[in-house]
Length: 189
Image (tube, rainbow, N blue to C red):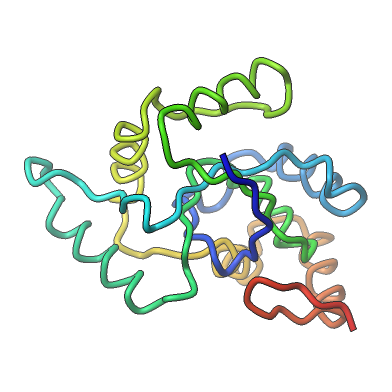
């Protein structure tokens, strides 16, 4: 299993808008702001490993599959799809930190993720036991909407809608003046 540092605009996010639990977001925000190395890694898949497309037998397969493919073709910087971790990735984006990602490609990678949960290296991994099942699971989740978004665009959307605490918005806006995102790099002037 490969570990990479990714920028929030490289990763397609889940549809959790706004995040489900503000208290969890607050915890991750504090970690991301003061000790980002303590934020557990986020499981992702690379788009070349297989797109999370629905089988033809699924009710919304044609609509979802066309929409996802069109989105990825229109956004070539999006190379990864997040499997889980909306709270921690939002906190990392709000604090202008890269996403520590674990690239899932095989059934063995998934077994390693479950072992990391048992050791306390991850707080949870709510995915099926096999890579093909994981692709189907994330496809089903993503099929709930044809409006896809990156971690970065979802975070900006939460800021615009003011569905996160004001102090987080203030931090993002004041801190963003000191940071400039370049694909795959975060450069501090």
